Length: 225
Ligand code: CA
View 1: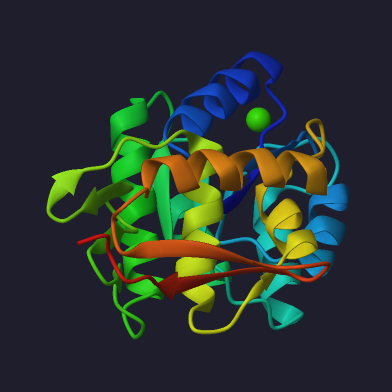
View 2: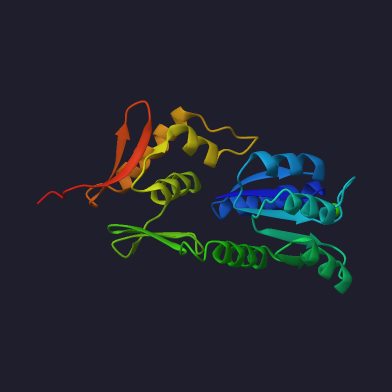
């Protein structure tokens, strides 16, 4: 899943990026509202984390503008100002939740999961394909009920394949969904993640089929007797 983080405090921004990446999110991070408005208009994110106190346009105004454009992604506000008024204004402008600084990372992750779960309530928070299950809110994968260890990138590829099934996913779409601005993922890198996933799914009854020059698709495979 792809997250936009808008935070002008550089130390906090890089610390959060690291923590979110460890939790298997792809993160784009910005320090001001204007570029964030453009990013939200041009890229599909699963969630935005927005600091209120930003240079130039503040987080309240950013949220107001984003909602006015009709962009409906979940938005979580970070505020250093522990005033009831700020929280009310933020929620009134269209934020979905808020966290008061300083906060703990597990608390942030829990709030993010709750927001993502709510926004995906209609589609369900678990994806299944044969013996394979992905818990989108808990960010865990199982194969035949056993925990399946995946890196963040492997998780991202598998998530896109499962979301798309029975349709295929193009290599470009996979690369876009995993990319962060500072770490561009090439289609060639996607081939590496797919081959690692194939190794982990060996003899599971699930295969990742290559559609040459187009992309990939999850398929059932007969198991070896
Ligand atoms: Ca700030």
